[in-house]
Length: 331
Image (cartoon, rainbow, N blue to C red; front, side, top):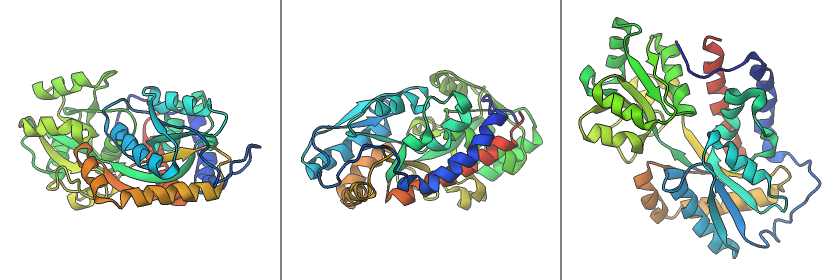
């Protein structure tokens, strides 16, 4: 198994710290600044998202920002700080010293970035505190139509019959670990083709150079609809409303490959628990409106509202899974 990312041994020394931090991170109150739950917000709130305008996360962030602004009586302004695995978004968030910035982002800010960047990660994960889960983004795997496989089991059988002959590509972050987990679980040898910009991966998929792609479901739909690809499974625990015929990992016979694309709202280190609870309750109330799910459907996201403890637990589950995959990868 080959992965075009490096995880140093030093990183794993810090994993225990992160694991310890995640379950209790919602209760961490150490910084001197205090914010009254009832008095907040006192002015405009920045909601920073690590993906660009028009992305599924951006659409969700703007949808929740609009509704939260109505509840809070203050503007909630979405700012896009895409790039560098979300690091730019976190740095922008940490630059706010008056506690009126939030992040609407993926679980990888805590679960995956410490694995990828190790000691070079320019922020302390304890400063990025889960407040409320909001949505799950849907990831999926597709196989090239040239392979003539109709299921994940058939793809695995073909890969075992042709070790080292099939190529794969994935967008950075969780999709990389999904395919790494597939190789570990199914004991197959497939070769990663790495791309700085993922657009050429679709071109290589169309020409047959790459036979397996892993990324967000909305990016894969054009490949399937054009006949160039076949969905093998989503990675989420539930089917996607965008492609309800596509099985989950459990349904496909590979339950170990269940990875939910957890996304939600993060706050600052000393945010009072009462404020976390209020934000989480507002998010849950917004998610209960059927119109919200309908507006999110084209993005491939599903609503997954939860409180700070539930969001932290989902992130910890993701962290533990990707850590196990990374530890099994060749150093």
